[in-house]
Length: 145
Image 1 (spheres, rainbow, N blue to C red):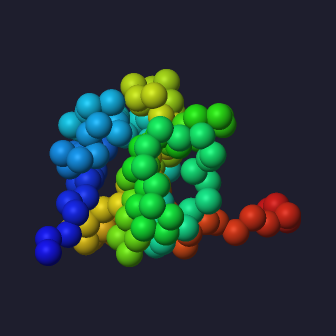
Image 2 (cartoon, helix red, strand yellow):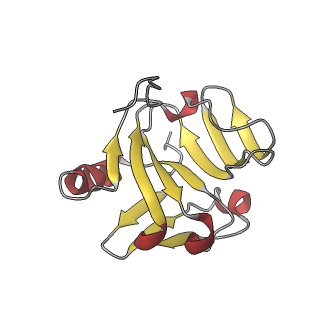
């Protein structure tokens, strides 16, 4: 049995491009791809277990199979609008956006990526301050430096 294909993320010096698989497109308003200028990207972080991320909000327009799959728009009742396409056991990128400059109706993209995409991001992490690696959620601290 062939695995469900995942979105592909390409990051270069000027643009972050997300190419959606055929089955993800209906949950993204029919878009085949999302392109965001790098100047509109606030942060890119890796998430090891994206289906466990709790910051997806209650109101949604999408599909959720608890612990297995989340696809669609999440957080419609909150200040942070997210487009999510994550699967269990497939690491994800959390791409935080400057909503107005991004040209998308989302503030954040949370996307499971293939191993090739993870290698691309890991290569960029060493030389690009916009990239951060973290476990599922950053630990909140009460002390500030």
